Structure formats: C-alpha cells, structure tokens
Image 1 (cartoon, helix red, strand yellow):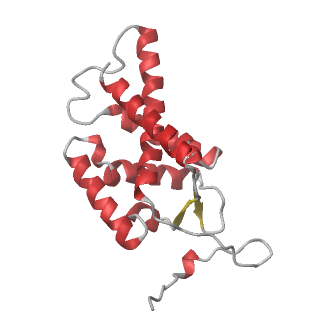
Image 2: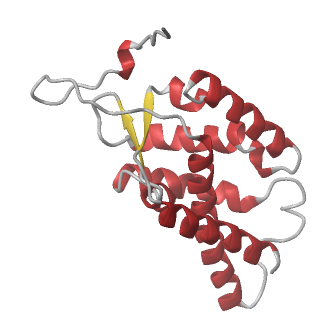
Image 3: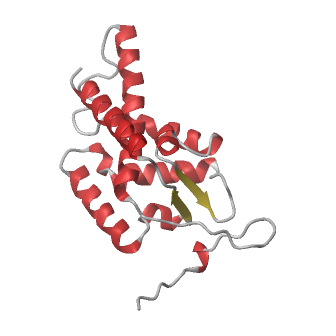
Length: 184
C-alpha cells in the first residue's frame, strides 16, 4: 500500500476550524494552457494597440534577446492576482491560488511569483532557454507536486475539474492567439 505524507502547510482549515477537503492535483498541462491563454489575450491586446498606433510598440533593438511582452505581463498578472484573485486563464481553466489561510495573494507576493514564473518557468521568454526551463519545471512539478516559485511563498495551486469543452476552447484560444500575434 502506498502511503501519502501530508505536509502541515497542505492542510487548510476554514474559519470554523474544520479541515477543508480540497484536492491539490499537480496538472502541469492545464497550468501551461492557462498561462498561454493569458499570454495570448494579452498579446492580442498588444496587437490591437499596435494596429491602433500604426506601428511597432517597441524598437527591434530592444527585443533582440528578451521579448518585452512577457516582462510587461508581470505587473499585470500580479495586479490580477491581487485584485481579482485570478487571471483570465486561471479563471477559464478553473485554477485558483491560495497562500495558507489567505484567499488572495498580496501584491508583492503576486509580483514575486509572476517574476519567478517568468525567469524560472519560461526562461525570460528566450528561445531554447525557455524550453529547457519549462522541461525542468514540468518534471519538478510532476515529481514534487509543487513548483519552486509556489513552494517559496507557500502558495497552493488548486485545480478544480474542467469539462472537455472548456479545455478544447481554451486550448484553441491560446494556440491561435499566440500564432496570430507571432505572425504579425
């Protein structure tokens, strides 16, 4: 029989003192799709701004190594997590974040997490480095059931069940949004 060890930080207690029955399922693919969903919506917004101003948002010299779109998303993601408790992608894919008994991350914690995801999770958006970082993060999440950026701030990621329809629609939006933006 396989025994499961529960870390005390994984036990959530509600205001009445009873233990909440929540499943913390590490699902790297759904988390990845939620992030790509967020990026695609943000990048489409940037494409709309680019179309409106009739020109590039950044000079090509600035984006030769690190894509600036990802950097711009960091404070916006933190703002979403702080004010709305979620991002559009996390909301669509039914993912929520908690920090101990707190239902909402404070802004600095959310900003730190967004920066760590950008640097460690997607390797600053730099081609090849991002693939390596994503593979390492994937394997660590599968083995340890938590990412380094969530472990450091004691953040629990809760994946609630989602329908196949929601999964397919969200995937299509993420894929086509990113393809559309990169072909502009």
